Length: 72
Image (cartoon, rainbow, N blue to C red; front, side):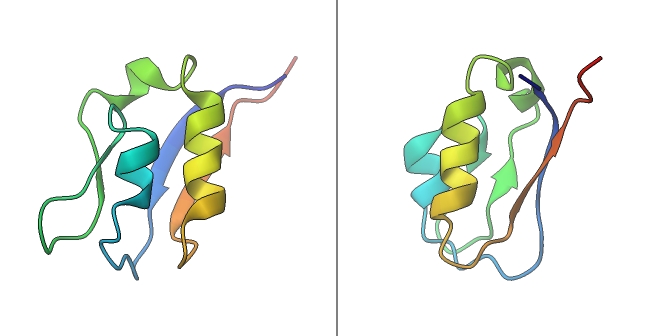
């Protein structure tokens, strides 16, 4: 099973807050602003892998992108 090495948001966020509802330790959506990845989010990538993947899958505009670690 591979882990997550990077999470980012591409252009097109509609500030729906779905990602923040699923993984608030990783995603932050200020009122009326696009989603951003929290500065300390990387420390949660391993523990919250499934939540981050769920947030990406549930994003209505598909702007959450995930880069997986390569498994040896």
